[in-house]
Image (tube, rainbow, N blue to C red):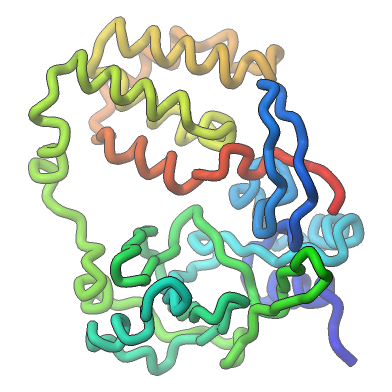
Length: 304
């Protein structure tokens, strides 16, 4: 007898995957607080904080899937110590491009996606990246994929599944340095990474950063660490950066959570980070914007 998605989610969690529920079909549109119509699409998280709320807590998982029995099973890859190579075989021939890299996929776990693509699961940690030209993306850290047995349902009620081609309940091959190098995921030295903004004046860079920050979804500011990372970046602009951070926090967070403790210690927090040596660049802000590119990622709680 085929297992329910609840049973599958529990089994994944017992093995070590941190899971959370995602929408499995289009569910119309809702009007946001800003008066914009937001389309409810498949694969969107159904819970607050989305991927950041992924858990192995069996009771919580049971609550979620009893509420949304057809929900897709999302997994936080970083928490689950997984790295996924996402090969698109729909828009481009990503499979041929993958083979041209000369990376062996022996020992990893293969999952067919509903669109005919392929997910390769490795154990270990790696960063997310996108290469539309090759049709090869990578998923890691606080990004997510949908686990096998999850399905997408179209408007006619037809279902397409994520299908495991290997046993998902064994440890896959480890992500190694040579794979990271061949995928071009090796970080450049800090002095090179900053070359993108080196030709901008401070004022020009601040204006560019403000546009990125105001486009960030609620998940970024709701997460304490990423909220502080934005402050760490803005400190180099002095009082101007401080005002941007305070205004962003007030408009995007405190307006929703007026009783938050953050409201009482903003000045202290700003002062406390001034001596921190952590390097945060404009690229970090772009990463947050890209990682949580769905404007309502993790904030919608509506029935499907």
